[in-house]
Image (cartoon, rainbow, N blue to C red; front, side, top):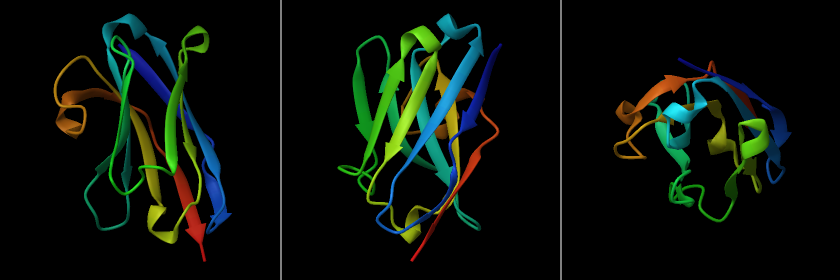
Length: 123
């Protein structure tokens, strides 16, 4: 079992920045990919970013490429999502998730999910 706890959400003006954190505990050796997804009201949960820990590769949705950066602190079992140049359309609940294999952009690949943290960007 893996437990994931997100933090760092909040309200920010367009153009501002936020940094989300996701602290993992439990059987953290059991997964290889950490991802961030988001879900806006009335919309499907969508892929934002992921990092493959064994290969060190990072992935981003086109909508956030160049603005968001995923990173990790192995010693703290924590993954981060630095979000810059935020736009109102980035408003959503952001979830971190852990997967052992599969398509990093497909939410069905992820077995463990955090409870989510709200990000609101106002113009």
